[in-house]
Structures are given as C-alpha cells and as structure tokens.
Image (tube, rainbow, N blue to C red; front, side, top):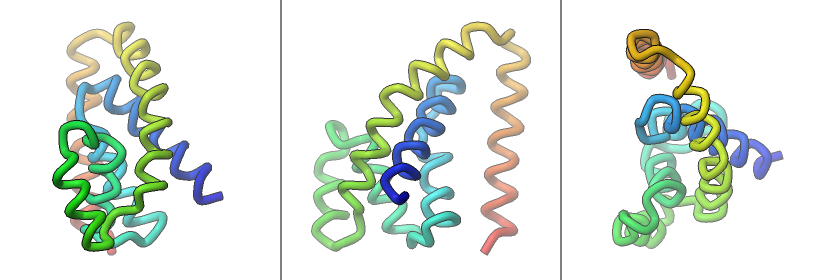
Length: 119
C-alpha cells in the first residue's frame, strides 16, 4: 500500500507540476507529513530524491547519509512524476491563462492555510 501511495503521490505532484509549472514539492512535502507522518526533514529529503536527484545529488546524499531520506519512496514518487507532469501539461494547455493563474493562486492559498492550521 505504501508503494502505491508513493506512486499516486508522484502522479498527483506531476500533474500539479505540469499544470502549474511548479515543483511538486508543494504537494509532496505536505502529503508525506500529513498522510505518512514524515518529519519535515524526511519529507524534504524524500522530495529531493524524487525530483532533484540529478540537480540536487549532493543534497540528496546528505539527507540520505543522515537517515532523513526514503530513497525507495522518492524513486517511486519520481515514477509518478514522470507520467503526471505530462498529463498536467496536456491539461493546462486547454485552460485559459487567467483561469490557470487563478487556479494556481487557490492552490497556493489552500496549501498555505493547511500548513498554518494543520498539526
């Protein structure tokens, strides 16, 4: 079940990233904390493994060395991101610019509010 959640999370983050053109960390980091109880460090480390391994290799290695990265989970999320980013880009290409901007603003506000008032 954990593996399926990680792949689904990667897919959702990929769709959001492809649709809005933002890093999936906006979705991945809060989801790992809320749904899997990951610490902020572990969530960030796992997100780096998933999204930034080629660019953030040194940061990912540091997180991994300190035990603050779920490498398997990060790689599973990356598999979902691969497909999800394409899906999000396809969907976004059919949405008018103003609506896309407003949807992005709502997403940012919703995540911000959840993080402020959540556990």
